[in-house]
Length: 173
Figure 1: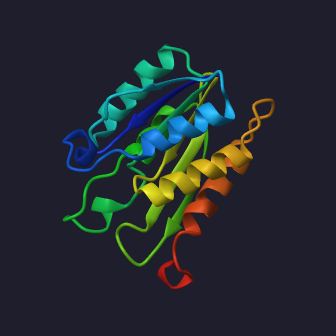
Figure 2: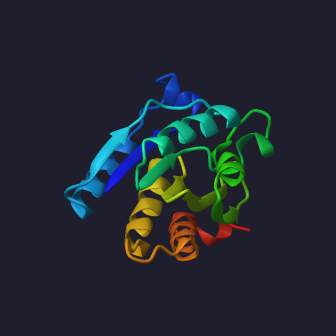
């Protein structure tokens, strides 16, 4: 298996926030798939066209799996003071076939849209930016993933449920 990780976010790109999720994902990929070749790309800015371009360049190198971290939230859709998040909308536009699930909450952060789908034969998933959510979603992905029969609905549902489990019921609408 060949996998690529693309972190997103102005805060990751600027070095204001440390990208801890990529290291966790790499460690898990190598544990589950010992022969896996993992490539971590430089972070992408929170701009839809930049994200699509970065994914497209990555797809052309023919990986089996692309994992994108960050950009799954509501951010600017909730408040103009919050960061822009475009990964989920970029994937919805770019992928050939996809499944998406959403969580709505009482704050700008807790609106999460995760997308799981295909571009050509490459499976592409996005994870939330916050470490606790990203690691929970990725662990759920690994539990649901079957290389012989990839069920994007099952994968997506398990990932969104894992993120949902990180919040008290009182915070979720």
